[in-house]
Length: 592
Ligand code: ARG
Image 1 (cartoon, helix red, strand yellow):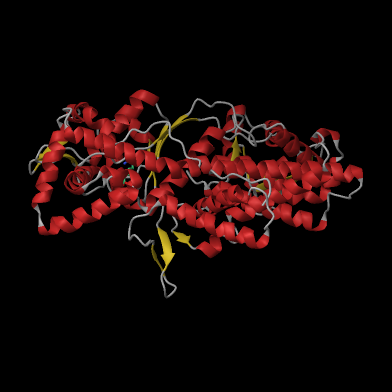
Image 2: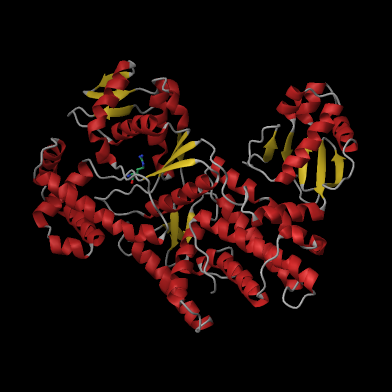
């Protein structure tokens, strides 16, 4: 499905766009008013879009809606609007094509608007002023008593990008790690540790060690099913809230895991505003259950307490309490929604969780709808596809690592970094800070690969294509930044202010400038659709355009007026690439 292409609507823009768009919109509103549209009609029907084909114009206006309100034929209205907008210092042309009006900005105006704004770090290139919108982003959220799954890596990377993108847009973001630190899986881990565990081993390598315990439990329980009863008893003891051995064990395993995650989290540039795992909701579930009961939607079914969702089109009921009285994953998520609502008053709550949990979140939202809770509207599952790896015979299948399902995030990152280190050793043996660069580039390769396509698609995990410096990869975009940086160093002059140079010299840089113009739209769409790939695509497009521009335009050695204008362009491209990468959670090395 095509994304909505509108970039600006009515006198109150729905997007933070450039001055250029705003000025054009003013002219357009003036023109339609002169043609008889009331301010209300204009507000409802005047919007700027990206033209289907950029060769037709930089921006377009589709006249359908306004024509309907005015009782005119769209092509006739489009022609009249185009006729009412003669060329001026902003507009080179306004031409109608059927029901559309296509606008072309004067190249000097385009260059000035884009480059001054980038230099000034003005929105949409730099951070926007606060919007008053609050977005909760629930991401990463591994189960600490079960293996870290490659899906958790995707959630971590996508969620991190969404946090950064929303912050850039001036939204207030609450990044939340809804750690799986409660329930039976945790009780089993505790049982395994109490029977076979050893603190020295645990400290040495917590994730691996817990993974070994997890496997051992799985094997032993086949011979000895009573282990599960033991686990259930430990869980009861834990849930009792008493200060007992179970509570201390829980604290130990949780602390160790969190500390172990901290390494990869900081390598990925990930931070959380709250680490409120499932355990945090332990004492908040009764109030949540009471709230469900009060709305009359809770029913008994075979001893369990459930909410039927047939009217919502979901066959499976949402079970909130099992017949043995215990609570579930859903119960904690429900308590979490209420907690977030009361604490943050969010406009959106995004759950960055694999597509396989679709039913879970559909049910959660449907329960809230059935309860007529307005917060239901804020609940948005942000699903994503699988990670695939190549089998021996070259087929793609669900990611498998040497440890089976488990992924040791640190080891994946280490492997990427080691590979980059050896590429550097081969290609650029004298590079200063080679280890630091290898870290930045290796991590970026993995992150970028994850964010490159729309999130719902499966990700192919393939070292060769991730690390291809000429492909659509993190290293490619980072390399573009480094190349621009090296040009700036060679020229070794302060970059002049954009309004101080002869921008006419950039008449042939229009493709670069048009991509730059689109940055704000890309970021906005990424936020609206929870789709960081719009930003990834923008960085690839900009890197590509500036590379091809620099193929036939040199900066060093050009005559001073031209050099100065190109210097401004190169510097702006670098700033914008660095900003785009930063929104994805990627750093750009100075040299590589
Ligand atoms: N811990 C869960 C899992 O690994 C993901 C939690 C997602 N967040 C949530 N609020 N349910 O499957």
